Image (cartoon, rainbow over the protein chains, first blue to last red):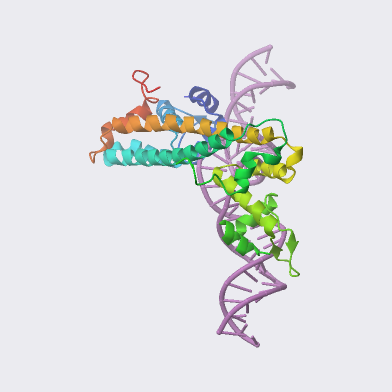
Amino acid sequence: MLKISELAGRIGLSAHTIRFYEKHGLIEASERSESGYRLYNAADVNRAEFVKTARNIGFSLEDIAQLLSIRLDRSSHSCQEVTDITRNKLHEVNRKMAELEAMQKVLSRLLDNCDGGLENATHCSILEVLDNGGLATTGRVN
Amino acid sequence: MLKISELAGRIGLSAHTIRFYEKHGLIEASERSESGYRLYNAADVNRAEFVKTARNIGFSLEDIAQLLSIRLDRSSHSCQEVTDITRNKLHEVNRKMAELEAMQKVLSRLLDNCDGGLENATHCSILEVLDNGGLATTGRVN
DNA sequence: GTTGACCTTAGAGTTGTCTCTAAGCTTATA
DNA sequence: TATAAGCTTAGAGACAACTCTAAGGTCAAC
């Protein structure tokens, strides 16, 4: 049976975060010592590691809560429920990537068109673009 | 002179957001009507449009505050200050993209290895991966 | 028996960007 | 003149995922 900071050290989270996860139903200590200390058994540790792994992959705490409830009773959930959660996450990641790619292109083009020298910013091409509502349509990167 | 909701309609922000930006020093109304209504002149509108354009590109409000202070007195700032802000933003975007790409790869691989059928989740390969600490080292996508 | 590390709780604070509410004043329209 | 739309302010609430604090109890070592 591990105490909270032992579990924390083992899975690489702070004790604070573990309590926070507990409050949100993700991690639990199946026992308490006489003095009220949380005590984690092997199953608790596995569950905590599951949470950490899912978090590392990028699942939200809410996603993880759903995954845990499936994990808790695998036979009454379908495999599809798991892939749905995973696919939704992938779509979300794809959406964010597309946004970031757009930003990346614009920022790169702003930098390409500006030498960034030590002269003053009176004719700075980046400020001009910002003043003119963005990159011109002509020659815009798609 | 535009009132707040006229400005809002013009640049595509809510009046709420414009007041919020004002509180953070990004947008200002150089005049008030007798009754206290904000009144925006052409320069105010240009400034607000600058803010909106920069926000669309993805600059944070803090970035924009810096860009605005340069814009306000271009001759006492160097072009380099502007490119520095832009370059930092690009680096930040690149970092986030790398994170998202890693997530994308893992999620795709999880989905590849799981048929996601309606059968129950007893042998769900995704749950297994999560239970085993992540994708195996052998064959890991770099 | 004292020090210091560790544990407990409830709850507040952080970050960034809004978004909304309440309570009341102003302006335009019918 | 009545009504509705629009404006004002200060301040609260939302979101995610922590992060920290205060005030105190517990435990191991010396």
